[in-house]
Image (cartoon, rainbow, N blue to C red; front, side, top):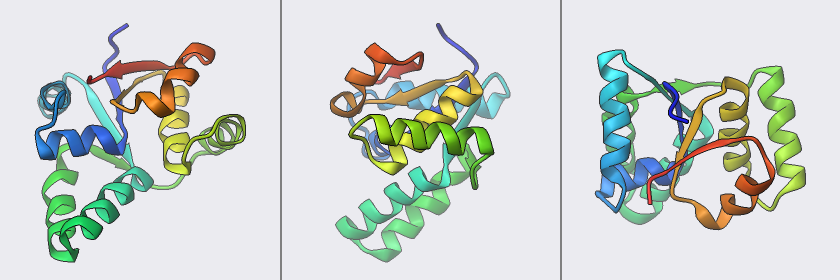
Length: 138
């Protein structure tokens, strides 16, 4: 299924920034978002993962530059609706995943969209057990 609603987890954005395998898929969805043909979301907690990863790797200035240059290309969700809150809690309690990943999955479920990710080690087991649409970038 190819929807017009996409959620990004941190690894999808990092793949785009570093031009890792699958970055073109992320770029394609962002291009559709910019043209108004799709909507691409990221939750602020997933954006925080990107920020602290680059902060740790290359310092504060680089991390801030990455966030300021990329965050205009997608819609950033701040906070959680009651439905996303409950769903994230259920997912976090049910699987060995990070809080940020549980939020990205919850937002994907609540919206009926697809999650763009490369995070097979976290999500393969979930894909087999949950009704979540994944768009694997590699």
